[in-house]
Amino acid sequence: MITSRILLKRGSLWGKIVRTTEEALRAGSQLPVPTDYEFIEDAGIRFFVRVLSSLRHKDKDLQKQRELSASGRTTNPFLPYDKALYVDDISDTHVALLNKFNVVENHLLIITRHFESQDSLLTLRDFEALWTCMAEYNSLGFYNGGEEAGASQAHKHLQMVPLPLAPEGPETPIDPLLDTAYFRDRSGTVPGLPFLHSFARLEDDAKASPLQIAEESFRLYGSMLKQVGLQIPDTEGAELPSKPYCLLVTRKWMLLVPRSKEFFDSISINSLGFAGALLVRDSQQLDLLKSYGPMAALKSVALSL
Image (cartoon, rainbow, N blue to C red; front, side, top):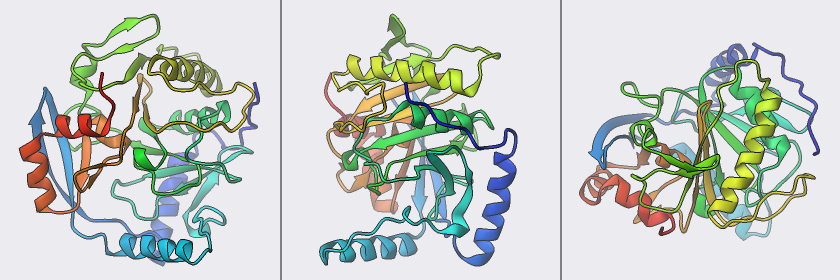
């Protein structure tokens, strides 16, 4: 297997995120998106739903990218990346950046140094970069594999947010359902999730290094893809295309959900939705989500069992 050379100094990441955030906010380089929130109880989950106050800056940035694309010019915010958002080098293949338009505080992006497609399968090097960061503090890592999975940028990037996701309740709102999972070998399913998925628990080995955990989770990732009928990754690190899916990773478990489309009605859903944390633009979208039900909304953008 092709591996990475790790550059991140152990124990340094959180402090660097905090310092970079303070500097980026002062410079106006990071533009947090303000939200309110509500909980919606549905299907045994207390869904955490953020309601945006304004997307003015992000919408303006996305419109600029669309205009450049329409004119035949391409735009990639990660090549080159904004140096004010740079947190640290993770490895010789990945860099850590702040999310410019963050909804969640201390939202970290894990990007490839050279262009790789967001439609491609993850590699062992991706998992090494992810676990190097996840070893630093309790967090949820996720990958929106393609536009239909909620990805807004074409350059491969994983993401990471601190846990817990909500100000009250379990680490992720979906946790209560995960306790009912049953397994065939290492990967299995969760009876309360009414759509195609694969779920796996990670072994709790305090002696394992981040790179050892990365190797194990990469193998598990391949078996989970196979379980849901998707192509498995190349162990030699070749960039292989993939059908759209969402992947969520914590220190305890992994969840993989193939996707059929990005939107439920007008509501964009990415990987965080499958952790029980959704985002709506206004009160009208919130009312729609309440009337339809968050679990039914997730089912509508996934694949049938």
